[in-house]
Image (cartoon, rainbow, N blue to C red; front, side):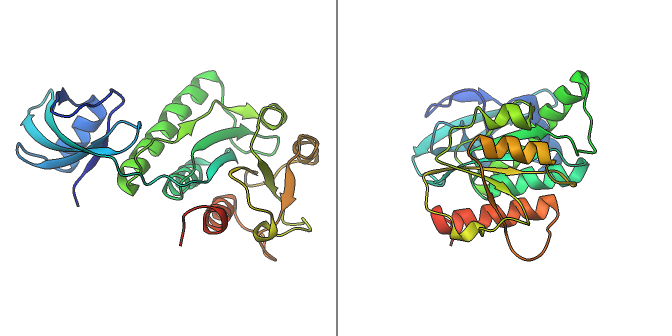
Length: 241
């Protein structure tokens, strides 16, 4: 499979570009790329470019861009995932699968029951790490646009700023099943951390118009809940299946 690489800098047909250090290191050390090898490049503005590696050394990887392919692989459903911060690999897994399932925006939530506590320095490092997760997942899954990563927010602050047509919070005790909710062009999905949302947080979300929805008769882990809920939404309202 031809490697796909995201570029934060705008791309144009025929341009000769030097890849950023993250992409260069991955291609050089993990994929052992060599001059003449083919790549696919995208800059998040839509479509992608054929490309060829022209030079590789310890300091840089140089690439020549070819023709632009305007194809799009983005879902018509605009989903925001507001995810309560989970521990380590669980959060990474959730974000990776969310990108694969077509999420447009991710908002990490600091919650009352979260076991993860971040000061300003750790929060900045976590955001940088999560941005890398989104980037690599977009490259590997064929996305042509990079999902947005929002700032860390408390639940009540997030609740009053969201403007999606359909606003949902997962709750295993809810009366309404997620699959039974009406169609919408934009959806926000709020999911708690390992311990779920607190009563105060559920009340804040409800007051802001978030509807409680359940996935089924069993209680799912936070990373499983995100995967299942996004799959249902994309299947019913998006482009999955």
